[in-house]
Length: 329
Ligand code: PBG
Image (tube, rainbow, N blue to C red):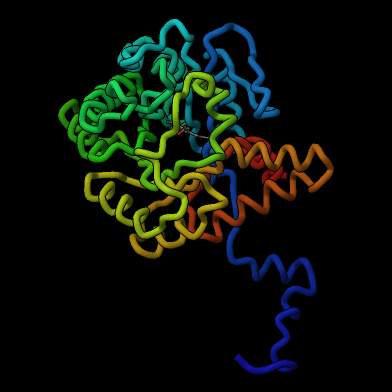
């Protein structure tokens, strides 16, 4: 590079057309995954800690998915809020083929077919009375192998309901391989596994736990299975292992505080990598905007752009529909 003033890096920034011409990364609606919460009631249920996000009855979830198609959003992710009376220590409702998640998946696929991808979460926390993602022993420790057996069965239930992508968010060891084997054995050869490979034990999940009704139930924390926020090398081992077991793509979660992990995963493995801009991140943007501390639309688009710059293939975000509207003009 020549020295100043032969090189003036501001030259290409001087006008809008030139900034557009030199832009290295862009976000489009096709980069977005829209998480939606399914409620068991027949009315909208607003979530106090996630302003602007509600749980919706299955019929309305179908309308949201239709909206996603119209906006150019390729996939929705469905999270059920299981009624309290159906939660149990072993999370058995997860294996009920007529549970809320399955009914929502089937309704969206029936209405919209392959015009949209439906992602289903594999983990037991919406179904357990203790709020943990797996089965616990007498001390409250989350058992790995026993949980993996249940997750493989849950995965089949979700695939049979019509899920296109299964996203295991539980962080048990060996679950990707077990789920892949189960899917292959039942002929679900094209059901994808998007693994939450590097999922951290984060303080940013609070509003989500309100949305799926597990916050009040959760005893202790999830640090014996979700990752320590201080660790990066370990994230690469998690990703490597999930890829070796058959993951089609991986997720880094949360998003903004972990962009270094996204970049390293992309550069190390060259595989599709998604970030999950989680509930607490969404809530921070909404709170800042409501308090007059920043412009909401600009904050939304800037953060989404940062994910693309870091190397993301796509982003899970509760702002998906709003962002798509902004991007579509
Ligand atoms: C649990 C799960 C969580 C999220 C997605 N799946 C919460 C947790 O691990 O406690 C968080 C998503 C968000 O905060 O938006 N299986």
